[in-house]
Length: 161
Image (cartoon, rainbow, N blue to C red):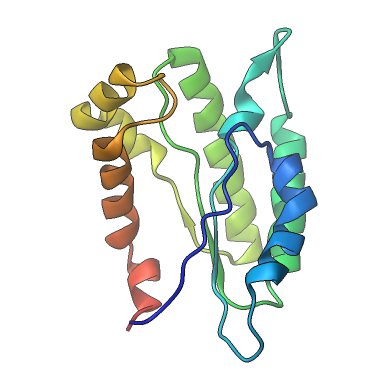
């Protein structure tokens, strides 16, 4: 299949940052008459603690995600991938709670959702890769594991049937 993929991720951007910029950045890459499919994956930066508080509450993160997904529906099919595992146990638990909240929201909206955290948290290669990096971002081996989780997902595969 011929397609062009754009990763619009910016390190440390919260769901609020994504909400502010996704549409404008997407419009720059959209070509008239071209089919568009959107994959959203964010939220970990929301769960970072600043002064003992999450940068963005789970409630606000879910509200931001809902607005993003509602706005993207007119562009074409979309899906969402949950936040990944991180090394710190408390941070991992915050990401786990956010992933569950995103999953419920996506189910309510009829948006396919892939929770990757549970499998990654149990994958020794992934967790080892995190430890060799900064504890939040894996190296190539870890990103390869994320790729395989997405690539094995029936919803993703149906896009290329």
